[in-house]
Amino acid sequence: MSLIGKKVVLAASRKLEEMSVLIEKQGGTPVIRSLQGTVFLAEKEVEPVLKELVSEKADMLIFTTGIGLETLLEITAKLGIQEQFIEIINQADVASRGYKTFGALKKIGIKPMAVDEDGTTDGLIKALKGYSFEGKRVAVQLHGDPAPRLITFLEDQGASVLQILPYQHISPEAETVEKLCQELVDKEVDAVCFTTAIQVRSLFYYAKEHGYLEDIVEAFKKNVLAVAVGKVTAEALREEKIEKYLAPELERMGAMIVELSKYYKENNV
Image 1 (cartoon, one colour):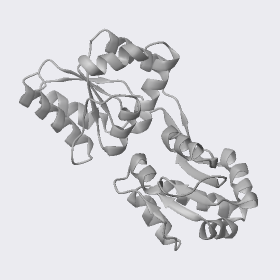
Image 2 (cartoon, rainbow, N blue to C red; image 1 turned 135 degrees about the vertical axis):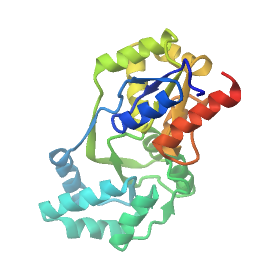
Image 3 (cartoon, rainbow, N blue to C red; image 1 turned 90 degrees about the horizontal axis):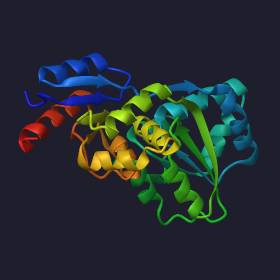
Image 4 (cartoon, rainbow, N blue to C red; image 1 turned 180 degrees about the vertical axis):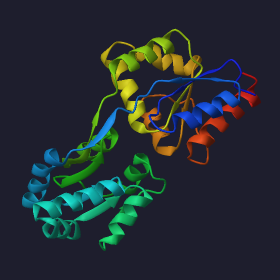
C-alpha cells in the first residue's frame, strides 16, 4: 500500500468513484477537485464561422479531433452547405492531429498532407515545419481547448488563422479552483492527477489571473507531483512550464493511479 498518508487530487469529472477506490486500496486519500468545467456544443456560435469559411475558403485546414470534424459535417448539413464545406477541404491542404481525426477524414475521402506521429500538438507542429504559411489563410478546428502553441506557431509563420470551435468550454467553479490553489501553496496535497489538457489549462489560467502562478509552479517543482493520463495532457503541463510529471505508458485512468503508486514505492517517498 504505497499511497499511505498521501493525499491525491483528482481533477477529472468522470470515473471518480473507480479512481477513488484504487487510491484508497493503496492506502491513499482521494481529494476531488474537478477542473474539467463543461464542454458544450456551440452550434449557433460556430454557424457564422462556417459560413465565412465557405464564402472565403482557406489554403489549409487543420483538424484536431475526430468528433469535431464529424460535428462540423453535421452542422454544415443542417445549414445546407455540407457539399461546399467538403469541396473546400478537398481543395485545400489538410493537416490532422490524432488517429481518430485521421479516421474521420478518411471516411470522407481525404488524405492529410501533414499528420502528427504521436497525437500531440508538438507532433503536429513538427509535421507542419517546412510548409510555407506566409500570407496563407488557415482554418483550425479546435475542441474547447484553444491550443495556444499551435495558433502562435501559425501566426508567427505569417498565417491568417480562422479558429473553428464546434465545442466550447465553460470554466470550472471558481471556488473549486481557488481551494486547490490554496492546498497547493500550503502543501496540503501530494499529487494532482490530470486526465485532460483542459483541466491543466483551467488551473493555470485561474492561477495567472489570481496571482498564484509562481507559487503553484514552485509547488509542482518541489512538493507536489503532477500526474498526466497521457501525451496530450503531459504536453499541456509542459506548456505551463511543469517539467516534472508522471505519465503511464498505457493512457488509461487506472494505469495512471497504478503508476503513481509504483512511483512512491520505488522512490520511498
